[in-house]
Length: 550
Image (cartoon, rainbow, N blue to C red; front, side, top):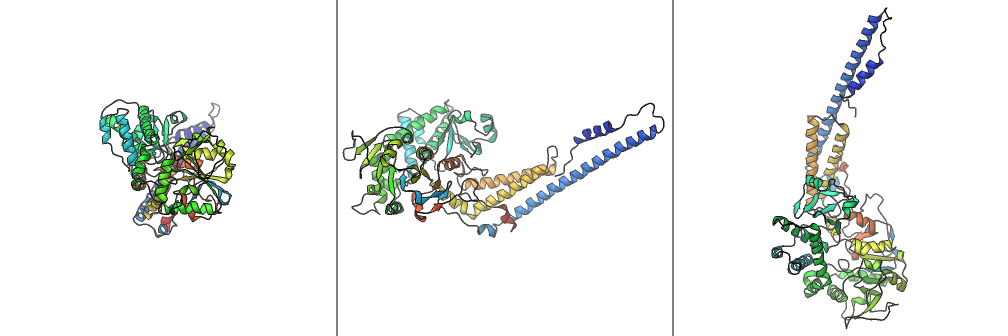
């Protein structure tokens, strides 16, 4: 856009004066006329510049008026969801989404994690872990007894958050490692953007600060994130001094104790109806793979008795009286100690189910109906002779389950249970409506910023900028609250950027879906391709602002 600024006048005038020829004393004839003509020329040029500047101001005002008119027209259309938006195709909540092209006919071996992969848990499990961990903090680590009054809040955390052990903040990061302005909490209090700037100097987390961050990436981390935030808030309210790194260390120790001691395993098996979800579709999927001649293995950090009890409960309505879930798998490995399993050289031990003991004989073959503990990837590949690209491993934890296999040449499938519900929200007309509104406002803001240069701000510009920003914040807030009021969507930030959690999925998962049995909807020899028009994550809906112009 043409824009004339007053600061250009001194530069233009000096150029004109410098361009005038000097008058020498010897120039007698016509000297007065020449000087007058030159002076008249300077005045005329300055008037011309002022005239052009005035015309530029009118052009700028016209541009702002046009953008204001477009904004007013758009707001009228915001009152009703356009029919074209309703006709947009819906994404499949049970679909398989592809980051790297994958031919299923090349996959001969299917491996599975157990927790939150084969096993589906109810929301009650987070409350159980939370309560057991807070009791450990009070009884074993001598935290204040008032901590026992804490209640797990299932509406607070999402997966993929980060805790800053140095500053005590629980935060959500975007794809590029910047702090989400509306997703940074100290305890249970959301920090303002100015507070974030004061703490970090910038929203972008650099390498040095990133060393103090710990990622909370699996579904067991829901209870951990909530407990950390509750304890920080409790200490703040009680005006007690504390080191944020100790809070993390103690809470993490409590969570690990709950798992490693078997407390949570015994709690789940004592009332499986409350914590586990029966799943006949899983049995169909595993049997289909067996019928197609595929090899199957189970690789989990959980102890065998816990896996056995859970699998029998989940499949008891589908399995025959004489059938055993163990017959579905060629190899069963428990207490594998992932992620160290992928890099260590620890030997396998054969586990005696009846005696609950480990054998001392060397494991150089995996025998049918036997259970194995510990081990390592190197020994696993030597025994099975299964080559990397023909193996696909399913897991829910991006670091413990999938990072090692992806670096070792296995194909990987991330199981993201939240994916199903988040796609269902994205499919709703109300969400797509807000997204289209946001895109329109973003486009108008872009036009406004390109039309108005520095120093050209006027009252009309300031008013329009404020109105557009207010409408943008309203749309962002509405979309965020459809997912989670504290942190928004798992895969997206409030600004529409992919989250850091999305980054890790993109990095370590060839494909991702909400449940393993979703593969039943695809042929075993199917070719899974990356969509040609994706931005970063292939399941993200893209609603164009042009829908409002139809």
